[in-house]
Length: 258
Image 1: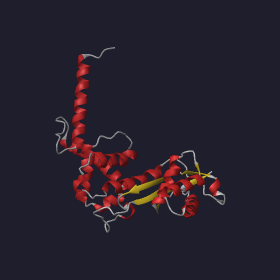
Image 2: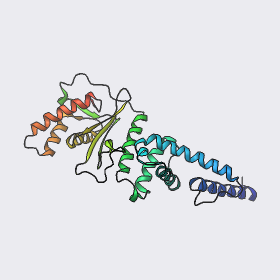
Image 3: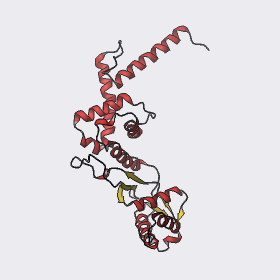
Image 4: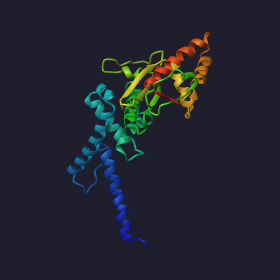
């Protein structure tokens, strides 16, 4: 059945109004409100939409929020709201959309140099807190660990940053990246608490190797690989130290032993 010319025109008019409405809601300074809608009502709609976004950002990026005054925070939220076209309709994915905006759409020249990394770190904590996967059970007997397979917990993320994001606060605002990178593993334990551990580059590489083998890898094999890559004059020392690290990671449920 074909629509009538009147119905087609009404459909076009509705889409035009819808676009005008959305444009004003996103960026009222650069877009006029729809002519036939009460300005006070439009302002109310705009405030409601923006406040929802602002609330989600404040909750999910609490450290970043403390680093900015009210004006800076408002301008950041407004810039995100005006520029970014979200790919998901779910509020729970707003933090990930915000990361995408910071990385690809934000003019970062006046921002803290660590803003993107800090936001990513805070997003990781949120993502792990709501993840549906289950944490591995705590390990009891690890005497035969070299002969067993290990795999990374789905709730453990090895991370590398230029800045020590876990230390950033209003009292610590590094202007340049340190010479040494920061390595962390953020994980959720069986009690559903999200924790982090600052780790060494060797431990980070160990976790990378385990992560590359989704089905699990023999503990002795990944320790041997790390020792070979390190080119240490005493590889047995690296293997012994790595074995102790694996035990500690298993006890914290960062890795599962199968």
